[in-house]
Image 1: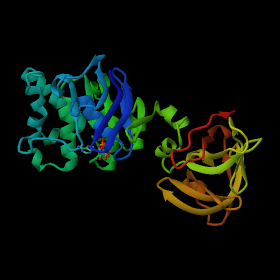
Image 2 (image 1 turned 45 degrees about the vertical axis):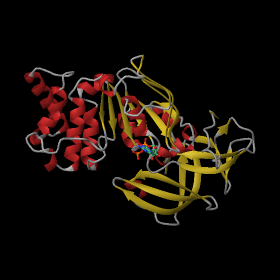
Image 3 (image 1 turned 90 degrees about the horizontal axis):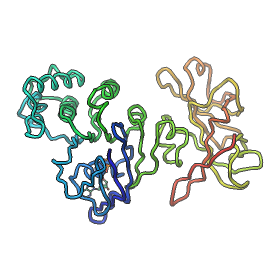
Image 4 (image 1 turned 180 degrees about the horizontal axis):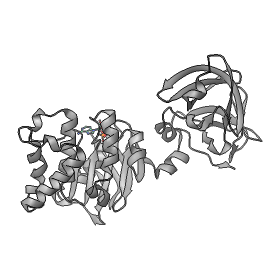
Length: 362
Ligand SMILES: Nc1ncnc2c1ncn2[C@@H]1O[C@H](COP(=O)(O)OP(=O)(O)OP(=O)(O)O)[C@@H](O)[C@H]1O
């Protein structure tokens, strides 16, 4: 179990962590998601003991880590900028953690462990090659393997798949969680890729400017985002956020489009209505919206259609199967359908902070 409380860390005048609170349960796979500079790597280094916090405490398995050296914390960390021995073979690089006095294993057991990890990472055929001769993606997998071969109290992984091409990345993502060691070991996994976080995380923590904005399961993050920024971070194409005003019966968006969302907010409140592109359809049951086609863009098997609503001031994008969009041309009138339960509601964004989610009534 990893627990960070009240962590503050500044580098000169840059505040990297600003009162960070984070708890990763025993055996959990926890994804820390945030944009560049949010403090993700600093969080991992703080857990590993590579950066002492200015204030706050780090506890591993309930034990305060103050004064405990990185080597003695029992965590295995993989950096994005991996430190490997370039002249040594991939095998040697994988084996080196198992040669340390702390983790020494009988040779046969070490070989077996390395073989199993290499197999899962798809690098069995590269084990004899010097790491300096491998591609970035291959090196990254060796670096990840080096972390996973040794028993640890926790794995700390910093964007371990970032150098892989899309296909391999997707494949490795699926395999990573199937690795026995990963299943049994508390893992804190850093990424700026929301698809990766949703695919991998038992829970996800969204970090922004050195603080955790929201922690939750993928369902909680998706259906109950804390604010518009969390809502924008998940889902591609991005969530539609339509500005409007709370009325007696729902929300009237700018341009006069009525949306059936009942807010726990006073009439007249400025709000944003959130509509995910995959929750808008061209047919079916639900609340109807009318508009005209603005543009269509093919995304493989589906098509993103952008529609001007009502008088045209508001645009929404939706994702529909290619067959359904085949007949659509710019300026064609269209009818859209949304299910009221899929509508999210937020306060309007303010300069000082993104709009928070507002509870809605069924
Ligand atoms: N050694 C350092 N010296 C000075 N500033 C630093 C140092 N390390 C990090 N920072 C600053 O602290 C902030 C957080 O950095 P951090 O590396 O934790 O972000 P990150 O979320 O991991 O970003 P990325 O996704 O780009 O790796 C940034 O503003 C960064 O510039």
